[in-house]
Each structure stands twice: as structure tokens, then as C-alpha cells.
Image 1: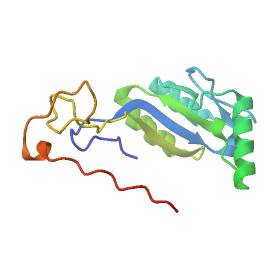
Image 2: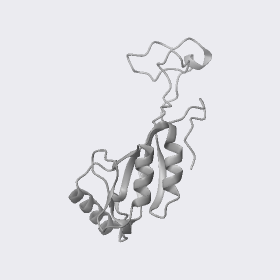
Image 3: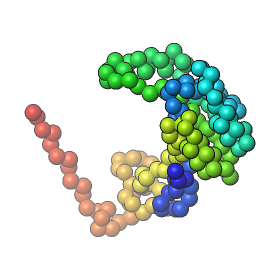
Image 4: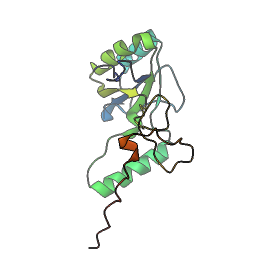
Length: 168
């Protein structure tokens, strides 16, 4: 489990949030808004989880922003469609951890028997090119907001038309 880094810049692309999946049998639940600790519907012991969250100043909240009924319906439909049991979607939570301890919190939670997996939420890193003064690549025409590209052999070459659609 390693903090995600942008290979181009060397900067972290972590948002400060972890996504944690708890074991289905524990029936872990978190509210849809940040809270200090999660709960277990069947009374399973979450003491180790609570200790990590409280000591680090982290909060927990439900990952999928839907009601319990909506999540049950989604799971039921997925099971009917696939013919296989589905994971307990309500047991996937966000953990918001302070930046200085996020790696430690991730490692600690990942080592618990209560968790199936832990992942760092990543910032979206755009790779779109063009229309950016810092990026000399030709703009995506015909965007009227784009200035004409600087003249070069590359920009003066006409683009080939896409291949004709096949009829089957």
C-alpha cells in the first residue's frame, strides 16, 4: 500500500481520503456524513478500527451516497443479473485522514482482519492536451476558444478523414 504519486511531477495525487472495504460478515456501516467511528449492525467488535480512527483524528462516512434501501435494491439487481453473490456495498466507506498520518492510517487499517482492502482515493489528473499556453500541442479543432496553432510541419498537415463505417 503506497501513496499514489504523479509520475510526471513526483507530487502526491492522493485526496486525503481512503476508501476502505470491510468484511461483509461484520456488516459495518457509516453515516452518509462524516462521523468519528463506524458501527456494526450485528455487534461485531470494531474496537481496533475505532482506536485507529480516533487516535488519528480521522472520520468515516458511507462511500456510496445512497439510502440503505437503494443499496439493497442495487445489490439484489446485481445478484439477479450475475447469478452470483455481491459484496456488501454499505461496508465500503471513506476515511478522511489528516495528511500527515494518512499513510499510517492506511497501513494500520489494511493490517486488520476486519478489512478486505484499503485504497487511496486519487485526484483526477487530466491528460488533455491543447488550448493550454503551457502545452504547445495542437488544439482540438474546431473549438472556437482555441487560437490557431503555431505554424509548423505538424500543424499544417491536414488530418486524414476517419475510415468509412463498415456495414455488416
